[in-house]
Image (cartoon, rainbow, N blue to C red; front, side):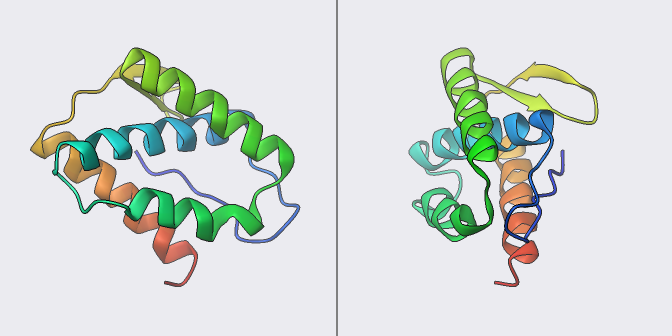
Amino acid sequence: MIVVIPTLPAQAMSRRVAISAGSFFAAAARCEEQNLIASGQADELLRALDPYLSKSDKANMADGHARGEKDSQVFVEAEKKWVDFTPDATSCYRVQGVLDDYRAQLGE
């Protein structure tokens, strides 16, 4: 479930990677709402990533976020499919791992 986000400006992600990232940020918001991961970190991380995202990255992430939020799913890029997401201790632990990977890519 790891999504790699390029950390160089103008190095756009593939559409699928960006959609996956957006869906994981939607999942993170649900985990935060349920107090299963620290609150506010997803928004903070999105702000930190913003300078590295192209316009298409942002648009595709928004699409992934919207679908993930609406359908309670995440897009698993490695499997090229949407899977159901329920915020519980196990799934939110995985989402936290993805957020931690993003943070590590930023060198935070």
